[in-house]
Length: 417
Ligand SMILES: CC(=O)N[C@H]1[C@@H](OP(=O)(O)OP(=O)(O)OC[C@H]2O[C@@H](n3ccc(=O)[nH]c3=O)[C@H](O)[C@@H]2O)O[C@H](CO)[C@@H](O)[C@@H]1O
Ligand SMILES: C=C(OP(=O)(O)O)C(=O)O
Image 1 (tube, helix red, strand yellow):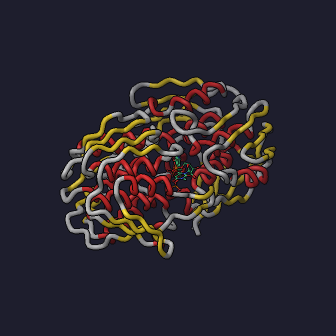
Image 2 (cartoon, rainbow, N blue to C red):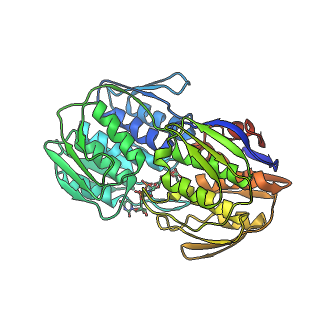
Image 3 (spheres, rainbow, N blue to C red):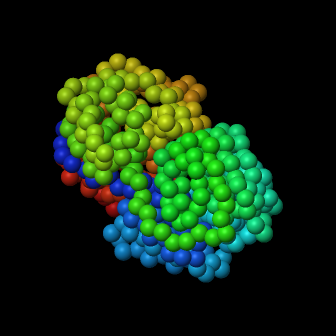
């Protein structure tokens, strides 16, 4: 199993290009199932989860062409297999996103239930509730959700909580339903917006984009389109935190600062000097960061996918901070590992109290989820001596060549087999 060896090596300085967003690319790839025409995508990140999604679409019968320069074409003209198997869903929960589009276009879909994962349970009853309201017959059999509907019909669905993949599944399903669907309490995450914009290019009629009330007028069919995936706000945020912790100065290109306000505000609170244009962000940190309290909530508040990274910044900050996680019940797995590196963090329920220390010390650490792994890499950048991050399988699901990007701005990270 591959590992990363990180040598603590002073400030990060230079420019980094931000990749396309994983959490936008995965639903948009699945949107390719909604039409027999070709969906052409640009700025697709080269990630393990993207490969897994492409494999899933291919197994269903779609033709997927990729030239490895971030362009992917999906043609779902002949879909012979309407099943997403457990083997793929267990490695990537986003596979559940084939449920809505497959059911809407082919009248039937069978998808393995995601179950839980390292960060918590991943229930989908809101997805099911919405599909049932739209006239689907849904059963759970042998760990699979099976949905059937000759043609879905428009309905008003009030979601009990803000769910990103739930909103995305119902949004895709509604594009081909008969009549109008209203999704109330919809997720407003920028990745949902990116999906909606792509769907409209394919001929969907969605209004209220970017709000918590999406109105979808169903159409008979969708057609092909070209769409560039939005920049990854979490990858960008991870690099900014790394720069702030190392007291460096970086410029991010191909970024989307307008989708990152809560993250940028927090970094300003730590003492960083931030400047931004339409598609770039610069961060300059001249002194030790100040500790900042963080509470994760749905967009536009602070994202759960940046909680581990901000907590890591707090471990070496001046003062103490309270970090509260409200989205997932078990998203503090980085805590014992950070403590092994000399951090002082105590957890009580969904709250972590972090007391800043002068220095972390390098150690061999392991993470069992994506953002926890990223937080250990950036901890390694400021730790004394060597840090080995084991099981980087998780990291490769969501970060494109993280070590190459960080090494280009002054880090010293090696990938070990
Ligand atoms: C609102 C939110 O921040 N969502 C995050 C969530 O999206 P993801 O789409 O994976 O998860 P959801 O947004 O669906 O879940 C948000 C919350 O709602 C609950 N839930 C969801 C669906 C459902 O049918 N029933 C139910 O109870 C979940 O258990 C969770 O506590 O994880 C992703 C990966 O880390 C993040 O990128 C998203 O920002
Ligand atoms: C946990 C994440 O992804 P997933 O929901 O695919 O596990 C993430 O993007 O931080």
